Image (cartoon, rainbow, N blue to C red; front, side, top):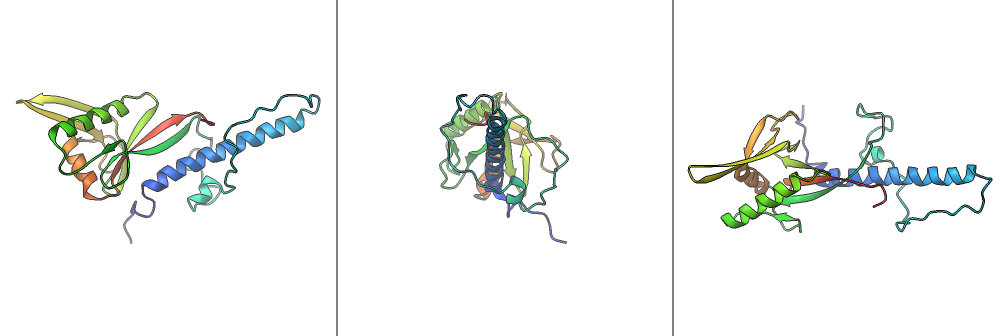
Amino acid sequence: ASRPSTAPFGNWGLIKGAQRLREDARRAAREAEVQALIEDADDATAPVSSNEDERQLPTRTSLGFLGLPQDTLFGCPKAPPTHVVISLLAGGGRAKIPIPLKRDDSDEVIERQWGKLSAAFNRPDASLIFHLKNHYALIYALREWTSDGKRVRQLLCARKGQRPSAWVDWLEARETILGWAGYKLMVAERCSLFS
């Protein structure tokens, strides 16, 4: 049996999947608005609200995009209550991202990177996702302290499964991310449907 791999899906799959879910929800909201106007035959002079984003949305469903059967619900038969945008937050390589990592970063640069990571983690409208060795894991907590004059910074995530079980040192996480261009930290942010 072949081992499961995140390679065919990658970070782009999470990012595009969230985009498709949002586009599907936008399309459904617009269709419901049009249907409500059609059904409200009494007031033909009612103003119609318009959105600046009038581009044509794709007709494929999110599940179709992922290559899954249309009746797949993943144990969640209801639409999510909020909409999510996923973007890259930290990583190596040439991509322009908010927290670029390099092997030769100075201690001061690494300190600033940790500060930016902490700021992103502390946002009430966002969650962080760590794409590490063949696995995606939420970051559940951050902690830091000084021991014998040395700063220790760690993030709580899951090396296997999704249960928060491993405190990973920030320097180890950086090395993992720098080990392959596909390993990244991502941020999943709540947003309004039409923002």
